[in-house]
Length: 425
Image 1 (cartoon, rainbow, N blue to C red):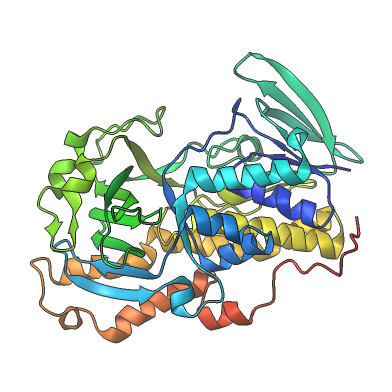
Image 2: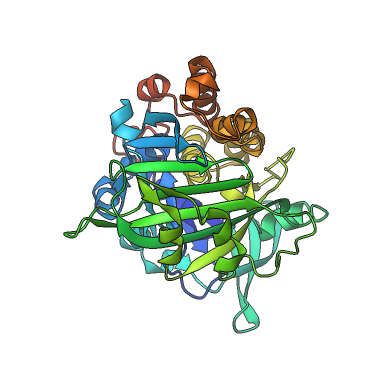
């Protein structure tokens, strides 16, 4: 019987491709009438890139994104704090890609349609109700745009990949309430700009309360220009009333540009990037508390429906991809069953819960906050402020928790190991 997947984002699409890879029929139900390549840039870390490569997507990713080679942290004065190689340059067997989120989603969507068929994705299907019977799970859907019932479908299992505002999670935990806002706002945009540093570098500058992040998401053109994804972040007064009903409203430059007006470094013009952006958007920095349970019989959560986290350490999409591949592995081992869902949760819930909490403590970006606290007026050499041991320890611990330490990942077998070419299903 078919596996029902609620949500056609990165996690849901990766799961569909993975299930198809092992011969398990599935169908995706997506709320919006049409999936479009929206959003801004994201990073896909080596452990997640590995899984997409296992699905045969390397060439498409390499064409559409930038193979990131370096991550660098700077103070609010533009002084270097810490840098490290990333992806292939760090010794991983797999690259790290910086890519437009919408383009990545479109790559996955096109591949799903190509391999599973166009009827494998039903748009305009918002999950309104589900119930478990003796032999299946029955899910009801609404077409919200047209205000009518979209259909009722039976499946072996229901997997919720429907994001931070998950309808499934809301029904399983009706008293949870809205996502938790920590008083910080992100303003995000994409600007065509000159190449900076290596042309494959992701930078973070500032500290917890005022921060700027940027990285290229396209290869340089004939003029030496690239599409540069940027994020400006600041902590606001607790009385600030951000518009919860308008999660990604169009940004107003006067609300955040003044905080970055003097951030003109000899290697990057921050206010110039912000001003030259055609469209910027505002996002509150939100997450949810880790849950005590994801799996309820034939229903489970994955991705942001299960473990929404701050976009620190570039881990949101990567962890959703790992969820999808772990579910697939457990189906191979235990069949399409409740036991497989429980085994998936037993591995992934503790790991992602730790990551959610670590991101609340700024993850690897903690080095910038420590520098700000110890030397707010600047420094000559960063090791006068933070020891090399502290710097390396923070970076190493985050890789451990997130599951992408170089030697450990390189030695780890694939999550999904196909037994020959014969499907068990």
